[in-house]
Amino acid sequence: MEKESKIFTIEEKDKKIRAEYADLVKMFDDMDEETKKQGRRLCTEAAFLRVMLSELKEIIIREGYAERYQNGANQYGYKKSVACDQYDKAVSSYIKIMGAINRLLPKNDDAREGASEIMEFINAGRA
Image 1 (cartoon, rainbow, N blue to C red):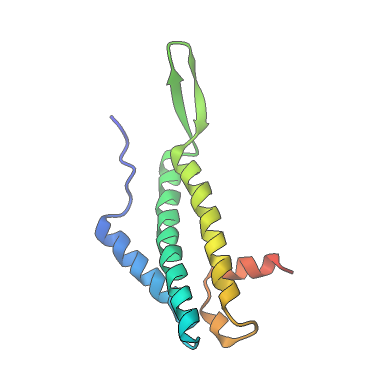
Image 2 (cartoon, one colour; image 1 turned 45 degrees about the horizontal axis):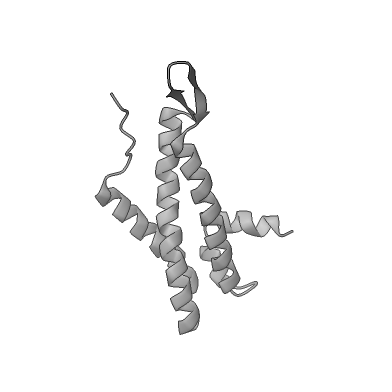
């Protein structure tokens, strides 16, 4: 029997995405309309990826980093799990999107106060 890979229901995902979006989009409250528009688009993607990463992390914790494979009678072993592979790709995309959000924000401004922990991580890497 195959393990259930889903962690959140559709309703839970939607609620989490909306909450994450609301937190992120606050950074653009005092910006001009064009910056707000660009920021909202990026925040939509970032919120989705953040929830996806959260769910993938739970799957990895539950099912492990590796999974067994078998090709034919004598070829078998372990490989990186599908959830790990998806997590790697998603976290890379998330970091790129958060970097794009960071570039839209004014430097040394109160708008940065609403930034998530990943923004602090990105800014620390620039030092």
